[in-house]
Length: 114
Image (cartoon, rainbow, N blue to C red; front, side, top):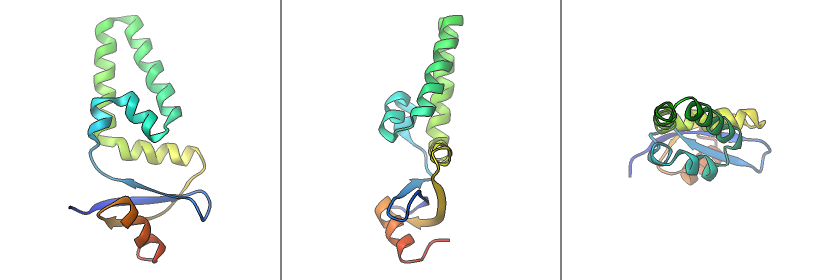
């Protein structure tokens, strides 16, 4: 298994979330499900509004808008998750290279994060 770069975020000392910096296939293929899975409610509302507005203008515009946003979610899903965590009051605690989110949290807690 390859290592990935993770950013660690915390709101309180006992809450820690690791966000991978990688391509997200689910974000590309099923954007609404990906948003719900990660609890990105603010982004989901913006996504729905953008696709609905484009679809009301033209059906093809709706399809193109959804495809474009899906590409963004696929390639920049980690950045979108980090941005929404910041909106909710989470702070970036560190960056670490690990094989899994659990490994990233363990390395962070041992003090091996940048």
